[in-house]
Image (cartoon, rainbow, N blue to C red; front, top):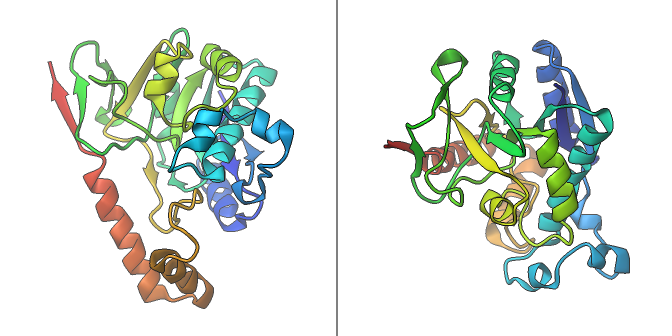
Length: 258
């Protein structure tokens, strides 16, 4: 198994953070240059042809959503080219625990068919997971089925099988949903099963904000974050990171059900 790390060329700080962690923990990895949503030309017929009109027309649509999906599809193609049975996909804003490789390999040994296992996930409600069929993993973690496949989201860290890579690269175009909308991927028949690792095996690094760009450039939040970054305002940056941690704690609650 190999780790594929999705990273924007304009984010060298994230790239350095990830390569340092992966090297420290002796994890075999390959960098995947992400498609930059800021540079995505929505007047290019080839680009437009790869995005479904319904996705483009959504009132929440951002070019970075499409770029993110394209980036993960690039990673899947690399998995297929390498003829790997499984792969670990990582975005570049996560913290890697010392036992990540052991957990990822234990997860991979449990997967079959076109399957994805989330090592990091969040949801806007408590994520209910089933006790039935739960598999033991290192460090007291478990591999479990979500009660509702539409609830857990996130593409920050997950193990994916070659079969899932094949089916998603075949079925995802034109892009019709966010890449981490696993309920959509499942409903469209691109994966057979989605499972989750609990407690989370990988956490997001609160010092890094999302590169999706959820705030308009002229919004107060966007301008504040840019100012803090440009002026290196440590106190404000720590406050923002602390706020992200609080939000993630709220959106990563899990409840076991029978």
